[in-house]
Length: 181
Image (cartoon, rainbow, N blue to C red; front, top):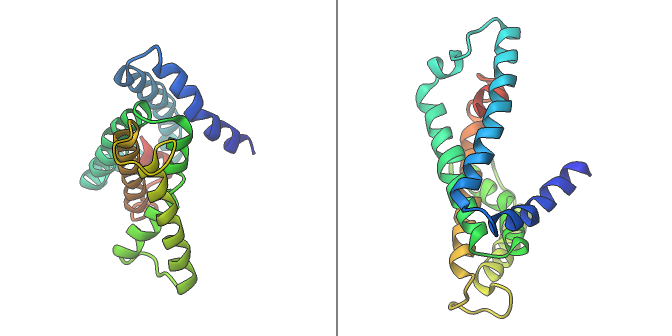
């Protein structure tokens, strides 16, 4: 429940900060603080495993660079710009479509198989997400002041889903913290 509370309030808190701080400056603080914690945790884990700090990167350079670009760079920029150009509630609902995109990408990459009930759930989720993206705060209106932010936020959700699917292929070979750093 604590995680749900923190994640749910994240959008509102970030919107408040965006009122007084440029989106890229805010992202810089977010990435640097998260990075510092993750570097410390990764160092401790690698020491426990008897491996060097850069061992995962040495073994899987292309996979980890791709994850870094998709999950840490491009996603972060899309997320913060999308949030800056839409409402906190709409951003949260759009990001709640992550399971949809993760399932679709997993299916497309032949990682997961989907049965009829799963496909039905995905269709309902896609329709609901489409309505939210197109509607902004009120009725469906392609001229909405929030349309750009909604589309960017949808792109961010898709990027994070791709990052999740790409991560699965490495989890058998690299620790989760090693992938994240």
